[in-house]
Length: 276
Image (cartoon, rainbow, N blue to C red; front, side, top):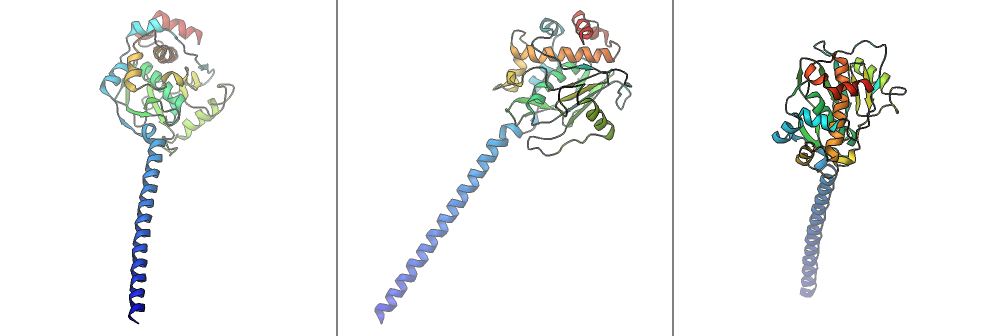
């Protein structure tokens, strides 16, 4: 009888030990699953999803491109997709000045490339408050975002719309008027393919879709490297970014009656403007 009791106690003890062992194994496996999930999430969104304050040195460089440098680069390696619009009323912004409408998405590599050029070009007509830095979730390209951007100019009004973030979550919404412009001009014959971003409308005088240089130009580069290489005219970054900026500058000048003259009356800008 005592032997049976001893056996029963031993068996119960073993059962409790096994139960604790399986509990620990379950906890360990659960922890590993959570860690793997977090790592996969970070690998997908980490560098391509964070929004951080812009590096002051980077921001200062891209907003103060020297006129001599811009002239030296000319159109560089940029291939403009700007298309002239005829017979439309001048598109103006809230302050009644010619409007520069940009529509893009933070996930988009072509937007990532074109934003650098937009910032360089518009900094010749006014000033941005510091922009945030991010990376496109596609191709992981260093760029800035126009989310929450503030721009001041006596010549033009800038409207920057980022439709989605890096996780495809909705950000900005177009007004009915902006949506009408987007639907009308972001389609053939004005652009090659419908609903292409980045989409740009400059005062209903010129529209374009896509970037003017290959996003691959920025591959594996940091914000600091992009800013530095944009100051070196023999670098592919400068040829792409500044060449695109000069096309945009010429289109804006055509919409502001060549104001300011120190920018728009430059011989190389006049030559580009006539080619549009």
